[in-house]
Image 1: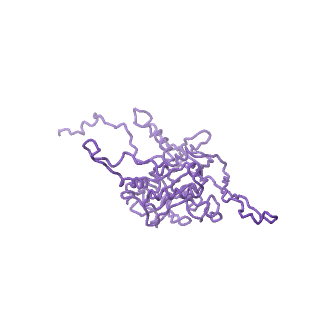
Image 2: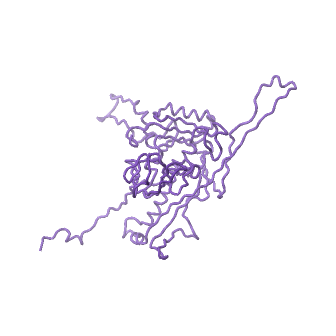
Image 3: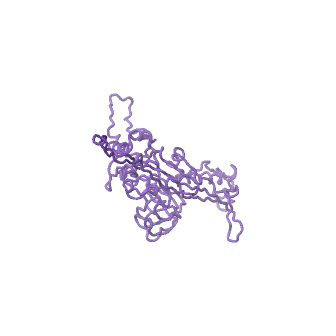
Length: 424
């Protein structure tokens, strides 16, 4: 008989299982959570909501010295009002698990985590992440990002964190263009800024193509309105259906665009952008708008880099035998006195100043489980018509967002991304 190897004793060996389930995917969201907590929420029916504005003032001003002696003093004018309209759009997220996953993980003796509980908990977090990304990139069409380049079974994008594992997305040549096809994301790879797919990308996919939430119409003004819709400079296009050209300047958001060649973020440029808000509606209204600065880690680093070169160390006043640490543990939490909200789903090279006091949300259906007669967990059906040993649940919402004061908001775009961030 041969010498017994370790396989002969394998049946009686204890197996160690580390009691921590490490989550390797990005969950939840940052800005959407802030909007939930800090902005006005109004429940509405399925009819469009009317959003009133007063874009123009009234009153005709003239000299009066020659008019007060019985002469015609002319006619006057009054404030001009208009209104925009918003309609809620619908989103859902489906989750599914099998009976065996429930049976085999429903106690501490069987598993370190109850799979059903884990699935339901993370469903809420991933749903928040989807809404966060959609609001960050929201131009009204449900576009999430653009294709930077293609690679084998993958797409290089501007920010891979705008997506999540297992997500279905549609590839469009352009809004109103050609739907190239639907793909499923296998894994999000932020280190390479790539979304890896379960198969090849659709034929014809090329740089500049748009990546949309699956099922989207692929046309403008058909989805969630977010940062790229409301934070827009100029007088072209519409604002909640109002033609911006009808009221030049009144629906244009203050902006500093560094152009295609980019430009460095400086204290002077931030102050100049703040001045544009003050010039638009006055300092008092600017100071009361609860302005926050929303950015990704690249722009937070660009802001911090302004302070690093001006540090000084007086060595003869230092104690101990260590050199000075030129970095604090945390970056600054403010920019020009405004709170910085760092969001890893935000688009690189952009800073949005958001007046939370004037951001609002309309809801026909708040985020919740889809329910039928009190039931929120549904069995799947097989090809035979009988039940499958699989269970489904859905998170659903009907929602739209608004910005009541586009001139109290502001943004910087094409800011130079510091070296080592997002492939630079």
